[in-house]
Length: 483
Image 1: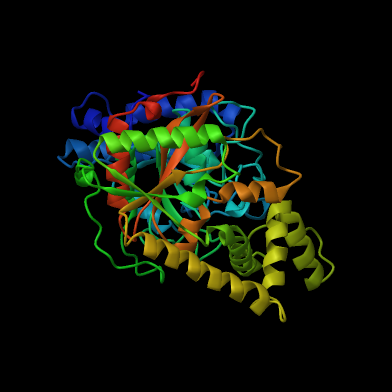
Image 2: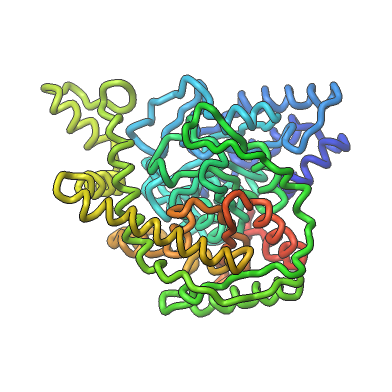
């Protein structure tokens, strides 16, 4: 049963081939057996899962239906879950049990999903490798000596290893799409405002967006259906109708205009990945797509702009963690200043401390105009490039990452080298656009992803293209050895 996709689980439950409770027990046993190799979970919620599975079976017996009713998933450990530890991968929140559910959690629970646990992540979502977690690094199931990507590496590793069919994740600069590429999954970052951020602990508020990680575009469509929608509790949520994503998967790609930016194929891209991207382009051409070269001239400025804006917002968001109201508190503080300094120094890891300091500096008097304001102007230029491009094409295609997953610890001494791996993904966050990564092949036995970007609220178009591509390729069906 662990090899079933979300769509197959929905059909199996509807046909009474198995119950949600039976499936949940199988997956919980599998997590207990295999996760020690991966470290993809921070918390397992067996009692809650079995309770939700039994309730879903009762609902089905009473005539209810739904693609998510009885489907097992896990949540990235920055979505608040009532009465369950929500740690953000940090010592700072190791003892924090949220008093409420995030909107994403409550909406998916209402749809009948079964929560198996909370997945590991880079501390406060800051990282591209899932090595900054206080609970230890997550391993890539395709090669346990390599990173799974970050910050949603726990969700990605768990789904890739067939511990569960799908999981929630978040994307601030590529944290859904990059781990999807590194672990042979399909991952979707929706348009900013499409999925509620209420109850999603913030890293950078103008960039963060929740989304699904799964093995197929079809599964991402099913999970996104339960996540998307307007939320009055979230001031950045946009009141835009949510289409039936699954119903739009089978549209023809005949005449679809695909833009390929010339800036994507520079010196930093592994030539083997470039070849796989060209193969993907040929597959889409066979399905009727039309390819056009385009330009995104301000892409070169995106990384420096992002690494000013994101740390600046992080320094503001994380100022609340001071050892007073909740979270880690140092022992025997001498005074209030000592309480703040030691609680934050002990509670935050090196990467979080680094980004808080960079952000505070960029926002300080005398430097705000030189750094933060200038970065926001570059952000507008990046967005304008996309708007110009989408006047000519329907979607934009390119690599998700410039290289395959690197070895654990390989970039720990050079944070900037890790930051540069986000070069293709961060532009979508700066512009607020939807983006999707789908499996496109392997380099040295490690998965590679192709990225698709679309205009605002065109998640359905991305899912349609990815689904048609997956009907004609089999990369997404490959399973890591041993799992």
